Image (cartoon, rainbow, N blue to C red; front, side, top):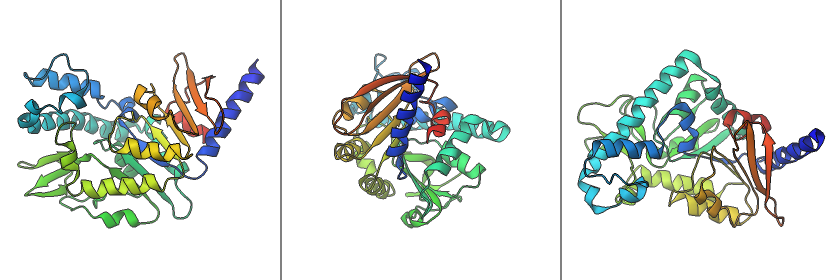
Length: 321
């Protein structure tokens, strides 16, 4: 029986390796950073309920709730609440990295090292996250990266920074904790200053209106470029709820571009969006040190396999590729 299971495991690993042979575009979602202690959408929902008396206490979908007209005047306060909740943990993660550099952090380093294209040595990461965990890990290990800013206080966005070789491009389509509005210009700041306004695009009615301003307009165009030219996708902790990225990924995978998804729990939205995909492997937690694998190859039926081992977690997944 063990030999049979080993054969099945090897087959799953071989398919994943085949799908990701040409370096994929990485889609990095909020589920990827929850293991580091970053708040989930559910947690942010709770924080807003506690601090905004008008907020619907029965709300279970932050995106839909904040889209209502009654919250528009409160959005600056809500934005600050979200920024503070994530920023507080973000700083704790940095402290943790400096004190321990534990295995969780090494997973990001190993991922970038394995995924980087040989010539030019470039990794493209698209993320909806505001936190700086990827940036911290890459800085710690001396791995060059850009988010479109120079990484120096008061620097402005420069789209040309994404054109370098030997670099990790981090396309933060919803902004970053260290981007602030200073006198009408978005600038990079390590720390919040008085009179500076955090520039993160929050769920809500004005989300898409904000996305058409610089630098978000250029970042969304860059994400479109990377998605449209992708030979494969590696999706980590992304729930497929983003109304801009999801349809573009879906268009590609329906044309046969392979996709590999790793996350603790595969969302209903993810399963729905992958219905028309020709080649995919989904890995999720099945409890008791097991991984549930849902996969499909071209012109074949969908298969569900249970493997021994937590291959849905980044550190263990890296060993596969």
